[in-house]
Image (cartoon, rainbow, N blue to C red; front, side, top):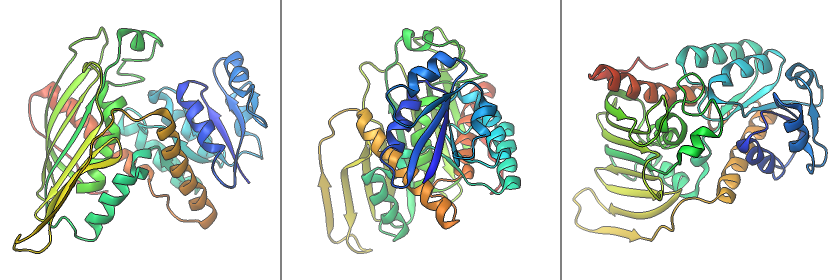
Length: 342
């Protein structure tokens, strides 16, 4: 059995715990939180899970092979570095961290320790996304032309007020860093690396340090163009949407399901194939747990088979790099050119 320890007993930790409970060959061993009372509350009712009083105590356990980092985002790398230096494999909730320097430090530490790292991008395992990526790999869309990612959600001021770290640059980031980064990752998985970012952002409806709305134009290295929007101001909240177009067709995904698509059956476009469906709003927590479980199942297999996981630390870094370029472009009022391939 692969033993898991969870660092941080907040809301997302529950998703990790429920997902771990469904992964073949995995079990939840222990949890730690800044508040021992919170750790005990979390462990209560989860058979086999113990509350540890310190991170050092959790990392010292021989029955823990993997650590899930479920802390505020700005602490991900610091906690992760301690875990990998203790010889633990690592699951990091999105984003990998809030700065590239922190992400790079974590990746370097994991490489030196010879352990595996995955950053949670559970929507890579949604059925519609799997179908889309397979289609792209098999050249089913032809040459990539255009992509669009949209996260139009709603968060109250109370959401941000519920924890001191929410809505801060140091520990959280804004709508794009926290909510929209999932579909940034899907754009990259579909269309490849981004070359240029031109963006604007604003804090429109909340009393927070960070943006609650961001819009960006993207130029991909393969010549495709893209648009990106993320907001926590859109009442009552709508499905996350991904659109990918190539010379031979288009696929539209909402909350992980293909809701519309059309394909040319030959290069002349003399005939076509289409389909459409209706979306039913935002994904439920149960759906997210299924996707988390799918990613953790892959990660356990990667550890056992000594292979890279389906979602790597570099994938997490790449998504973070685009988010930070959006912020920088918005601050400077100019196009940001991203670095070379890594």
